[in-house]
Length: 124
Image (cartoon, rainbow, N blue to C red; front, side, top):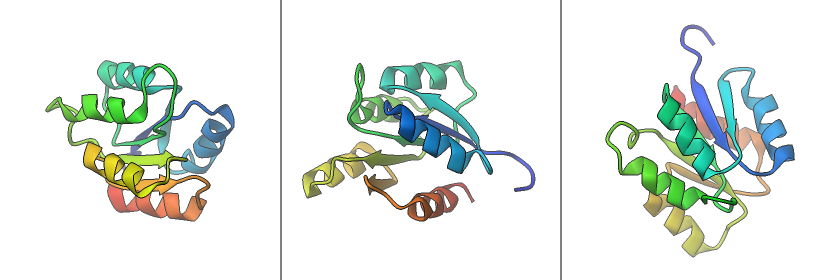
């Protein structure tokens, strides 16, 4: 990938999944990891802002829906695209995630190529 290396903030409390996501994304992107929504908000505040956020919904301290709601309320951060990557898979969960502002909603277990394709659609 020539030129700018896009920055992706991964917000996930599962260490094994953090490791997997970092390994598949860091070839093409700068990856920052946050263990929960509060850590993610602090990382975004300290800047520079990520180009994309991949977030779980069910996390300790601050969940993904609440985190995205906070991001979407500020004009400096509301345009940051979000992909929810979560085990919450009912139709209501998907609607809630998209309504919160997610560009894509991917349920676990997920296909790596599906995630990478969605990341590319957003960033390229």
